[in-house]
Length: 255
Image 1 (tube, one colour):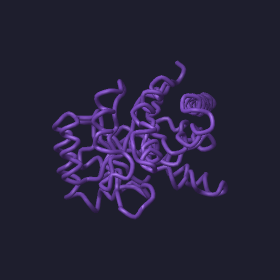
Image 2 (cartoon, helix red, strand yellow; image 1 turned 90 degrees about the horizontal axis):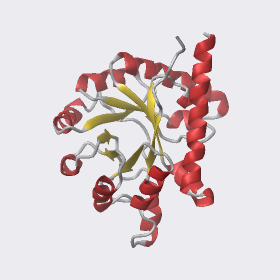
Image 3 (cartoon, helix red, strand yellow; image 1 turned 135 degrees about the vertical axis):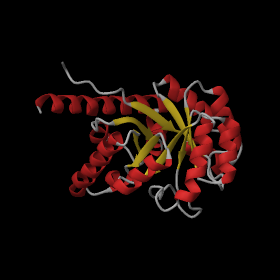
Image 4 (tube, one colour; image 1 turned 90 degrees about the vertical axis):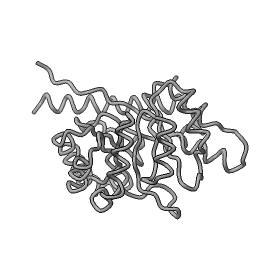
């Protein structure tokens, strides 16, 4: 019987549409409109990070994304009481807990689930009890993955930024680390997502990881949209993902 792999979902992060909007104030460009265009282009979900300083996505954006866009909403947030309460009010499809520092330009690494167990565990529990699917954004580190399983998360999203940003000569070792982490994720009974820094050039090997079921991509596609439009940028990414998935199947068939 030929090998099959689960469908690889594509989540589109619309944060940086809001970044452009907030540079001038007002309501344009609208991240909700971007999410609707992403849906039309074949996206499987929408991601938005409501930061504590509200530097891009606003509270009203989260409510509108939940109410007006017919795609699952992945609400990225810090593990704080304020964000927990917003999630419980909004009831998105999923919450992804991420580390957050005021001075960082973007999320710089994975959540220290093991070291912050006492702070993270109660938030995971209350969100899960409310029917929200909880994901933890973590490094490809076995200790963090085991801590995520112990804490009761349903999903981990592996941080792919180090792989994507590394010189080409260093990428194979970092890719193997992600592959090993994805295999352990499945062994632990967690769903495996991957995200951060993915481009047309780096997405293929990530899409080929058989345990991965969702990739979340934002900044690169919003940048490409300035030149070719959001729909074509997303569609090109989908083609690159599908090519990576096909490569995984062909390699498995030769094994």
